[in-house]
Structure formats: structure tokens, C-alpha cells
Image 1: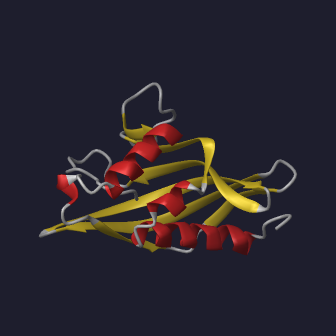
Image 2: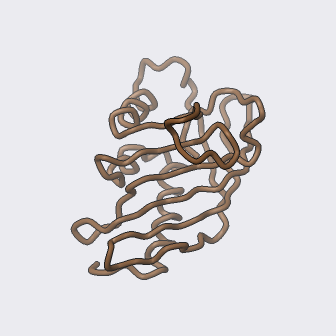
Image 3: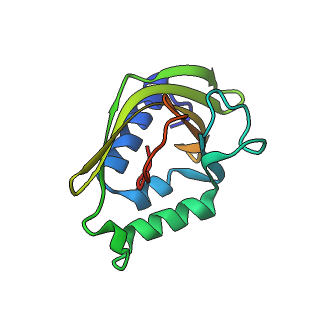
Length: 160
């Protein structure tokens, strides 16, 4: 692909959610730029991940560790493994700039994570910063804002 269409961007968001739902974490990890960050702010409308605590602010190294932990046979906290489901609203394309190779989407979703008898439902928005590399879309950065970020949560094992 030389220049992605808006539909390409939207399809990418759906495909990423399906990878996570299917537990294809290695494929999901391959979507990321090496310098990308996955950020989940702790505070409502938090402006920056460095001036306040976050639920997570993971670089490629930390994302790789998370994927390795989820895939490992000796991760006893994942026996049986957690499962998730993303129910996503059609993403908005907030920024479409082929000249700068910068594309930003905004997606509202419900995320359900379950393991044994426990189930957790999160309402959230995801902001993807995408870029085109060698004809394929890649995630430059991803920000996930929890609607009720100021509530107490249990462990989120997978990735909304």
C-alpha cells in the first residue's frame, strides 16, 4: 500500500482488536514501531506520562516481556489463561496526513477480560498514532483512557 485510505486505518483497528481477542500476541507485537509506547493514564485527561503515575507506560521491551509472560508455560497465574473480547465502535479518523505519514484514530470500546469465575468490564477510548512503513501500517503509539480511571481495579492481565 502506498497511501492508506481511511477505511484501511479503520480496518487496521478492527484487525488489531481481533488479534488480541484471538490471543495472537506475537502478531500483535509485530504491529508496533520499535520506539512506540503503550500508555494507559491513571488520571482523567492526563496530559503526559512522565509528570504523573500511569496504569502502564510500556515501551517495546516491556510489551515484549508482557507477551512472553502471557505465552509462557510456567506462568501459573495464567492457568487457565485469561481471555478477552473487544466490542468496538467504528473508529474515527481524527488526523489523516499522508504527507507527514501520520494517522490518528479514536475508538470507543467495551473491553471484557475473563478468567475462571472472574470477569471485568472496562469502558474506554483508544487513540492510535499510526504510520506507514514499507507499505504496512504500524502502531507508533497507543493511548487507552479508561472511562472510570479513578476507580479501584484488579489486575488487567491482557491488553485493552
